[in-house]
Amino acid sequence: MTVDCGTEVTFSNNENVQIFDSSKWAERGFCNKCGSHLFYRLKQSQQHMMLVGLFAEGLDFKFDHQVFIDEKPNYYCFSNDTHDLTGPEVFALYGA
Image (cartoon, rainbow, N blue to C red):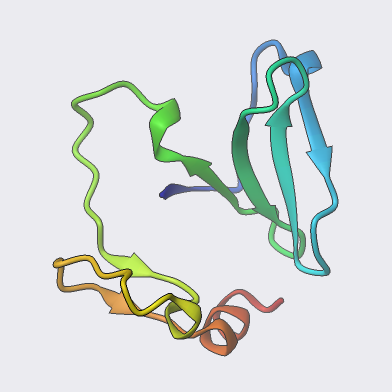
């Protein structure tokens, strides 16, 4: 699960942040010491989607949408009422 953090993201101790060019539309950021996934960044907009686990507990996040919903396994289901996007809808929305 990720949090949309927009385009103005900076890191302290960024010497440990490694970027992997994972697709035509996004890059993945991970820790080069432990391998933990930190974020994905949309190439066109530089918008960062940060892993929710990176933030302090108790923050008031709202789970309000899912992406690539058309590719989910049959057993995968959240009970929340969400705005669901197919893969093509995600690419249309973010211009990838």
